[in-house]
Length: 172
Image 1 (cartoon, rainbow, N blue to C red):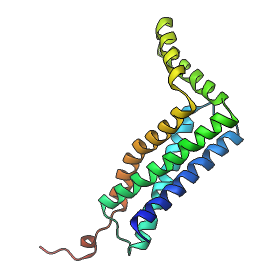
Image 2 (image 1 turned 180 degrees about the vertical axis):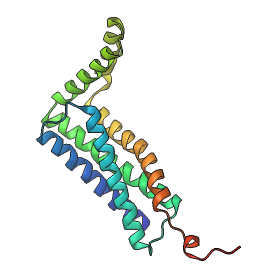
Image 3 (image 1 turned 180 degrees about the horizontal axis):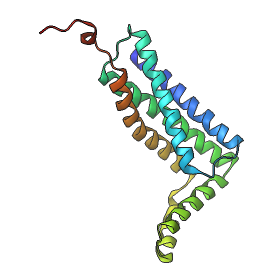
Image 4 (image 1 turned 135 degrees about the vertical axis):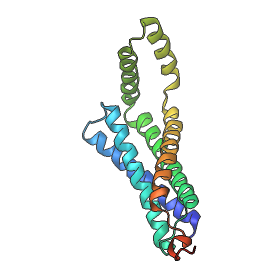
């Protein structure tokens, strides 16, 4: 299987896992704790990237360079992020527009916990209300998955890499 096809397959699996995860969150009404939600979302993204790297190794006699791991992981996370963003956009635009209100409420609570003054909170919330739109979710889905994907790909690449030189006996 070609590298591009493996990247696409990994991205589709990653996107599918992220969407299934968000559907489960919605099913169990667990969207209120965003910190836990984001942590598990990163874990699910890691599973998708791991799947991509494992598939690559399976198709290449167990070999995986760090460079290929980084490329494959980034490709899978960006494609997965695109699917996550599109799913979020459709979900918020057509099925549950109140999600944006929940996000804004959570952001306001964070500002209050930081002991910001009321004028600063009001200015920030006004700006956030303009920014946080269904379209913003596409951008944030891609960006968040790509940023997390960099770190996950580096970590997994370091642990899973296996070059031809690793298989040959070392010579002095």
